[in-house]
Image (cartoon, rainbow, N blue to C red):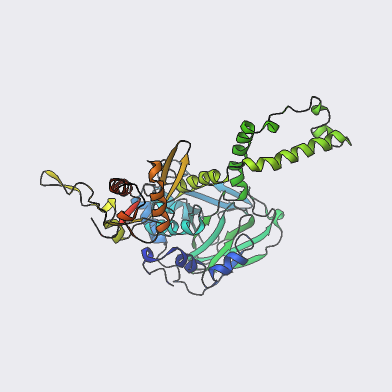
Length: 444
């Protein structure tokens, strides 16, 4: 499948399958995901054509406000030393291309803010992963290397767009590791995968796999690294579950409020860890008992909702098709014309058919005594530029919101919303429409 097809019509599963083809997605997630690197050689330099190019890189430098250190890094790696050469201020073509001609690599940190195609791809993939999808673009001159050997805390899909690059992937030091410092060649041993990526090829490696890439003598390299699953582990969820569970347990269970033994400092702690003392056995037994008891107070669903809010804040806004734009609040015909406002107001009736704009673009969460609907439709393409948006939902309307969310991708008539009155149905639909959360089957 060539990238020249209409991106806006690609569904999530189809886009991901296109990314990793010919490996079936089911096989990939069963055998490869989080387990091992894989190289897909296609011998088709046009496979990813249209995703991004050096010409677009140049256009962005000329037309957009690209700032050194914020949007663009200039790097080099020579004689085992990695250096960053970012001057202050805007990254203008005159300066950037001079760095490149001097042998420096260029890293565009958030291409989704400048490229509509990259934005669209990532906005679709974030639904596939249920986690933020990000990207960096790397342009490297021939005969050079921009970065030292290292490993990352993300699942990485290296998509070769132009030229060639020699990649070496090394064994894992610690499975699914967090982000690392740079390594020397002496630290990493022999590669377990040694390949040359050409335009149209793909390299995937999980978190924790040490890797490095260098350009061949005769050609530059342009690639985009698509990433996901940062801070999306069981441990990251438990970081939210455990403190909340402990707070609840302290309030509700007297066993967690009982005092520690008077003399526990005399036999516990590192300086006493080698002691053969029965009191230590009893102490550990009590800790184990309380840890097991703690599970009974774990607010798992509430903690998952916290993770969901974090994810929604990370998300890119959806890219709307022309039909979706025309049938959403962003395409409403309200305007100033001939000295007055025309076509103001929302004309929703019980017969209007509505649908959530995207799967996963909104989530209903309880915040103590109130219920809020959080949504991504007003997010910025710049990471966390805006606060996460939400609107308060009356408790008696939550069933209707859940009905809409679970009905996706089907349109439903406003009259079918499980509300107590016609007025509630229309008021809810108007609220969601005005916030860009739903759109109508036909333009209003």
